[in-house]
Image 1: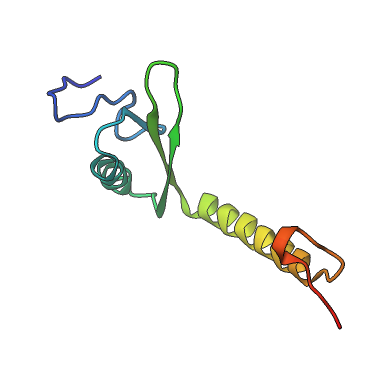
Image 2: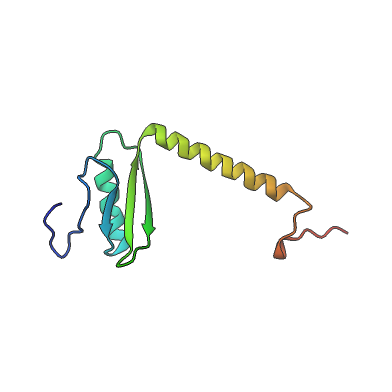
Length: 103
């Protein structure tokens, strides 16, 4: 663990291994730090970041993605989009104000 000043987040992993996890500071600043740290790794092509609720404090968790991992993410996003388009084309589907009225 590195020594921290009030403006420096506490990291739980070295910059070259595993996810980057820190206590929440101003979110825009913290996510930017995570992304920049992750992009310093030569194999990183993208960074996946989320806020994880915790008992004492919430955490911002960022995971650097390799090209292979990003291809898997693209595949999942494509699958989700296809499912959404299929559901939207279902004319028998009726949810709330999305009911199609034919005359």
